[in-house]
Length: 92
View 1: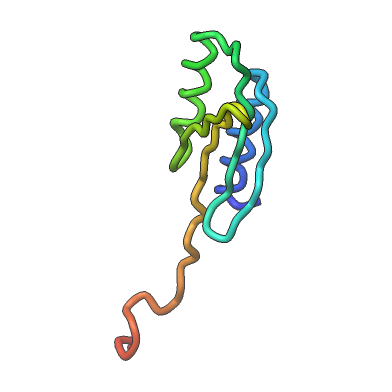
View 2: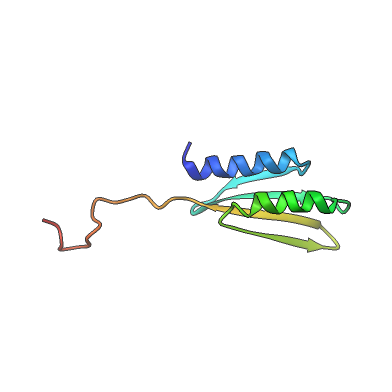
């Protein structure tokens, strides 16, 4: 499992341990983690949740009166190294 997927799975497991149901979805350039946030989440739990998502490359909160609150985080996938790092025409 690539390191980025492992990081995403770790973040999701830690959010789940805090009582937030999570979803992990791979994309082309990143892996996303989404968690439904209950209305009655205590302030201490918010601090713990923020400590977890702060380890992601990006995170945010979507809030709507229709859909509730969804916390999201994204972990970038590593760009694979290529053999041609000097550019075209610069190979020895």
